[in-house]
Image 1 (cartoon, rainbow, N blue to C red):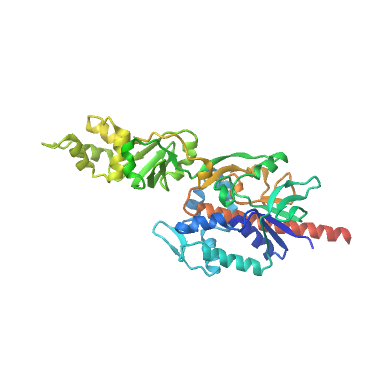
Image 2 (image 1 turned 45 degrees about the vertical axis):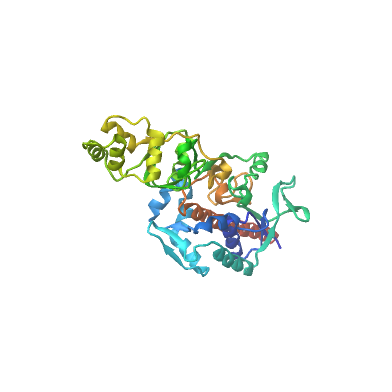
Length: 403
């Protein structure tokens, strides 16, 4: 009996496997690591953000340039479907004040256990320690396994090999070499949802670990209000991550330390007579900044402008000198990978019939907040369903030819 091969045991691969199993096909899932879903489990350590509950147009906009390519997939499996899927696995959910959807258990492990139990019950054959090495001369797929080299000739293959960040969890981007060797087009990998490197002066050390809260970061045409943590190596967190595309393009980074106060109102505050107070004390009382924000102001604004208007302008757009993005393997996700132009509408490689791609190995990026996981699930489902249809079509063609 012919079978489908899914390579990669993350959310996209598991969803593709489920789609193929649901269509009645035999499925072998190959995962290079000793267990599946490692990045999912790590993401769920601080609370598994499944998706963002918002209207379709706003949700799709988070994917920027890739929104058009992903639109049908996200319409098929968007926020409502993610919630129904999780609850169908016996994991009740709740929506936070920001619209983010979480399982009530918060962790990923109960959901992953339930999902694997369902897939195993459907007949999924899991093979861990199986790393894909590339295509054989006869078109088969070469896999390094604990038993040695194996060449598989599946009826259909779904690649769900991840991006190029968090190599220790399985997303190492090594698959790109066999793709290049086969002449398949690839967009270069680049860090996404990454922190920035800052060479702090010594006085900042006591603020390491402190958050910058309720500030607005800007880079190029992008802006985001949120929080970032001051670390020994720089700034990281949800406030910074969505600006990664602009920072990669070398746009300057600024922060508005008081986004709820207009520049004119700030000028008025800073123009009040200070009496016998020192200028430093008067400024501190006028701004009422949290200690971390005050420290960042002093780090990047000195010497402080003498006039109120100049100081207000600096506070509303404080330049943050940085040394670029954190290394790609430290980024939450990556841009780059298989371009949509290399795929048909079903996510099948145009130059490799019967081979489909899904998940973060596709060339798209999105901010954190549930968008990454949703698109991985949506593309996995889409690729799995189209792979099942293609497989069925091939089988039907063979039977017709025999008839």
